[in-house]
Figure 1: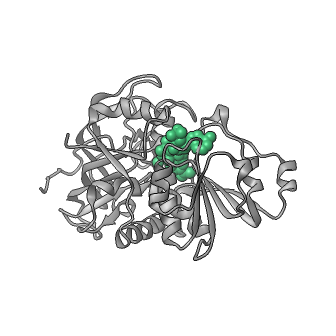
Figure 2: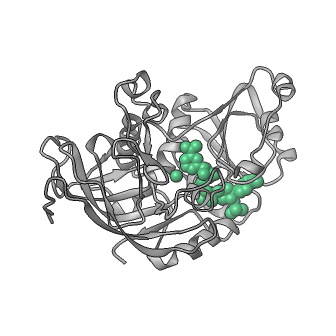
Length: 355
Ligand code: NDP
Ligand code: ZN
């Protein structure tokens, strides 16, 4: 399976791109930067579809860079390694999440919080300009391969259920990280608002950490699945909820009202925001509202650093915590996007890149 790439040779790639914010996916040939001495090349087997891909492809946060090949939930096999690579060898499984590089020298990078690189050099996997490679645009995982610094690739053991690994690289870490940050443990009471790709992972991790978990959704369509995962309740109407929570994680990707959630927190309870609705409908909390909810904390959380991502991956495989997935073919991406925005999707679509 090893592939040879000559020094300085750009790497040919084939992926699926949108060419405008209302475009459909089309196959797209492009090249990636040459493999450097610390880089690896991964043959992509599976790519998850995150709701962030939809926000990005549709320019819902800011104007996107087109053509855009989304995808930051990547699982595959290493097919080439630069001569200074030590973490991987050809044939290993590897995963890639939202980042492919950063300065490595600032305080944030030294703490392995690369997503907050203080020099602004965190390079996101797609829809970003790569300052380490002449500011060329980055292209994500809806493609046959990717080249990146080994430091940003996550080791995936051979016994992993590889078709389910990709979503861990974003949905997994983005929910694992705030659960850790808020110190969730045996007996904690956790609420998860938005029960899709991220929400379902939050439920699974929180339960594994010993928490009593409830789901907040806008209908009862997935109540059975929630209870089967071990959640105690699925609430649709917040007014009737009597429990008080140590932590509520919001993964909601659309407009919603934060205030009723704050009311459900215990004294000292925390509201962690990971969902990123389009800018024009982003929810707001006023200073007054915060004072009326004194003694509670509201914070945002952005994916997680590379060290914590490896920790999450090892935790997931050890405890067999995997996403609920539906495998699709590349020509079904448009349909998957539609389902994810019209309430027809269940949890995570994963593109089988060999199809
Ligand atoms: P999904 O589409 O898989 O899941 C979203 C879920 O939220 C769906 O089940 C949807 O239900 C539900 N929902 C929508 N509106 C409401 C509402 N008002 N109340 C309760 N539930 C609601 O998305 P993902 O899980 O992939 O992503 C979620 C969000 O997290 C996105 O905005 C994404 O961009 C963001 N994100 C943030 C990251 C970070 O680092 N902070 C990293 C990754 C993603 P329904 O089926 O009814 O539509
Ligand atoms: Zn994501």
